[in-house]
Amino acid sequence: MSGLEWSLVAGGLGAFAGAMAGVLVISGSTVGDLEPGAAPAPLDRRLSIGAFLLSSHAIAAAGLWQLPTVGSCLAAGLGAGWMGAAAAGLVGMLTQTDKIGLRMSHIVLRACVGVTLLAPLWAYVKLLAVGDVGPTTIA
Image 1: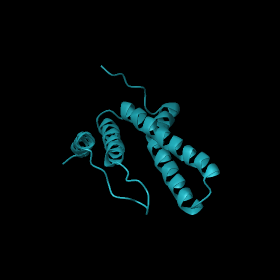
Image 2 (image 1 turned 135 degrees about the horizontal axis):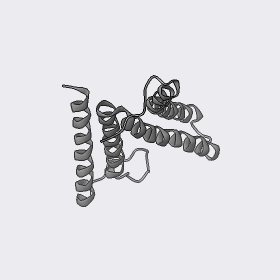
Image 3 (image 1 turned 90 degrees about the vertical axis):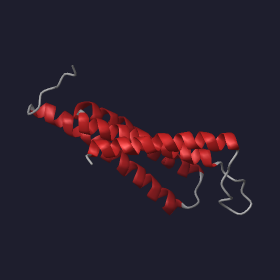
């Protein structure tokens, strides 16, 4: 199975998970307490976010395999989102000072994913600047 096929399967799984999240919302399902005395969190919220992440990253991966110029832009958009999540974590840490070590590890992970997703566009721009690769047109 090629990388493009794997990314399309992952996107399909994300879409299916998102549809199932909608079904769970309609049925009123929730997950058990995460902390003693806490209200149960709805399962659909986590499934929806996970489905969005899986689908959007699969689309960017498919774009990178099929048309790297467009795929690198898609990946850069996702990378900017991950960097924004890291910045939001830093701001949130200013107001909530508990579990600093855990919060910092989440911020570092988000920033690393963001930089990794920004890398294809950075490499493409560097290649254009050197003159080894000319801009391509989409017919």
